[in-house]
Each structure stands twice: as C-alpha cells, then as structure tokens.
Image (cartoon, rainbow, N blue to C red; front, side, top):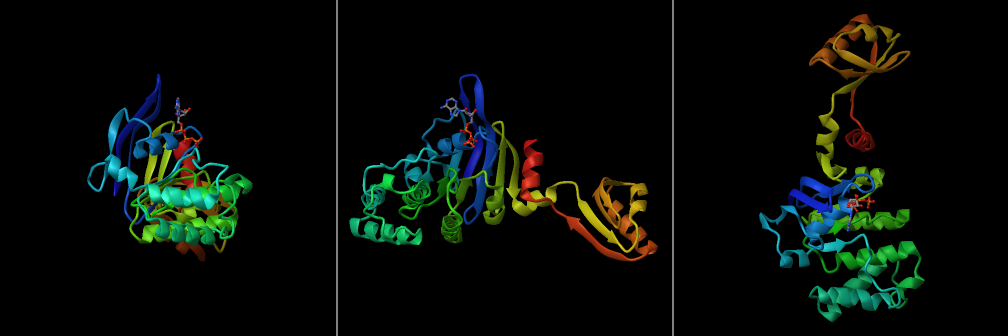
Amino acid sequence: MLEIRELTRRFGDATAVDRVSFEVPAGQMTGFVGANGAGKTTTMRMVMGVLGINEGEVRWRGAPITRLDRRTFGYMPEERGLYPKQPIIDQLVYVAQLKGMGRVEARSQVQELLERFGLGDRGKDHLEKLSLGNQQRVQIIASVLPKPAALILDEPFSGLDPLAVDSMADLLREYTRDDIPVLFSSHQLDLVERLCDRLVVLAHGRRVAAGTVSELRDAGVPRFRLVLGGDAGWVRDHSGLEVLDLDGTTALVEVRRTGAEQQLIAEATSRGDVHEFVRVRPALSEIYREATA
Ligand SMILES: Nc1ncnc2c1ncn2[C@@H]1O[C@H](COP(=O)(O)OP(=O)(O)OP(=O)(O)O)[C@@H](O)[C@H]1O
C-alpha cells in the first residue's frame, strides 16, 4: 500500500498542497480528481520524488519511501518525456532497459504492448509522425514498462479515443488484479466512476473527500424517491424531511430526522398504493460538485 501522509508543498507564499493524506491500497484503482490547479500534479510529483516535500511523508509498504522504491514505480508525468525524432521502438526498449530489463525481453514486451494499443506496425516510426492520441498511447507504454510495483499516472486518459481508453482501462484492471496500487488523475468523471474503487478529491490544495466509491455515495444525507398511485403533495407536510422535488405522484426527499423515512413509508402505505420507495445515491459527479463547491 502507498500512503500519503500530511503532504505539504509551498511555492513562495502560496500553498499548492496543504496537509493532504490518503491511501492507495494494493489491488485498487484510485482516482484523483479536482479542478485545474487543485494540486494533483504537485502531489504526484512529491510522491515520485521529482519535487521536494515541505512537510509530511510518503510511505510504501509500511516504511518511508526510498529512491529505490520509486524506481520500481511506473510514472506518467504531466510533461510527457519521449523524444519526437526517434523511432518509437528504440525509445521504449531503451526505457525498459533503463529499468533493468534485458534487451530481448524488453523488445518482446514492447512489441506486445504496441500491438495491444493498435500500434504494432508503427514501431519504426518517429514519435512525431504519430497523431497526438497515438503519441499518448506510446507514453502510456513507456510508463508501464516493465511491470511496475505501483502506478502513478497524471491524466493518462486525456486525448485518447474510446478504443484507446478501453485498452488503457483493461491494462489498469490487469494491474489492479495483480495487486498493484494504481493512482491516476483525471477530469473525466464518467471514466473515474466507471473504473475506480476509490476516489480522492482535492480543492485548493486540500483533500475535501476520500474513500471508496460506495462509502462516498453513502456518506451524504440520505435521499429517497417515493412514487405513489395518487398525488404526492401531502409529503410536503411530513415532518423530518425536506422535499427536494415534487412532480405529481413522485417526490424526492432528504431525511432531516433519523427514522423520518420509516414514518413516511408507513403513511404512504396507509394512504394508498406505493409503486416505488428507493434510496437515491448521488453520482460521483454530484459528490464532486458538492465537495468542490
Ligand atoms: N513549479 C511551480 N511554481 C509555482 N507554482 C506552481 C508550480 N507548480 C505548481 N504550481 C501551482 O500549484 C498549484 C497546483 O498546481 P497543480 O499543477 O498541482 O494542479 P493540478 O490539480 O494538477 O491542475 P491541472 O488539473 O490543471 O493539471 C497551482 O496554483 C499552480 O499554479
């Protein structure tokens, strides 16, 4: 498990990351979200040791992280690091060798990954000849070579078409199945919702929400939708609830007093037919909006 404890980074008078703590457990995909400038890249850079830490620490497998530990991590930085004027395959094999792989093994793993990302016949091309999205695919391959102990990815999905998103998602799922912690930042909340087991939300350098997706969805004030056979107007007068929406036979309510929803359903059944009574959990996009408001 990767642990981020009370990390703080200042630039001059501005605090870009302010006592941020969260965990990236093995075998779970953790999404890292927040508005532009919230502090995601700065946090990831501190985790990877490319930026100094003012306060706090990063722990890996229960001990303070070392330079050697970080060398075993796969990292996709915001500034993509490959050379435009060199053949893709040579660069990727070089990256894999730098990380300790033998040449033959490196070539075969690179070729396999290129094929997986639909670039099997582009290995000899210079990077700059590829479209931006395909260059992004190559950057992804560079960051996952060879099999990493943990993955720290700064916006790995940006600029990818839906097919490449699927290939990337499949690859990340394989890593998490192999108990590798994965942390990735993204502005694509639908993707985060689809892929992540856990979520960390930053706003203005502070952590404003963190937990598993179901913990976060269950954390707010409970909301229920009630659909009746007849008019639902009487719900307005029911105590202990706030009516968020009322439309003919349907009411959306928020529970203000513990147990008020039980009294509501009892009254509803005594008045007539109840077609539906369900807990409504917010989508991640709603949680995000509320946490960062
Ligand atoms: N090298 C630097 N010098 C000065 N300020 C910096 C530096 N790097 C980051 N910052 C500031 O720190 C804050 C956090 O930036 P950061 O890049 O971490 O945000 P982010 O959440 O990754 O944003 P985005 O989603 O736009 O990539 C911003 O106000 C940014 O201007």
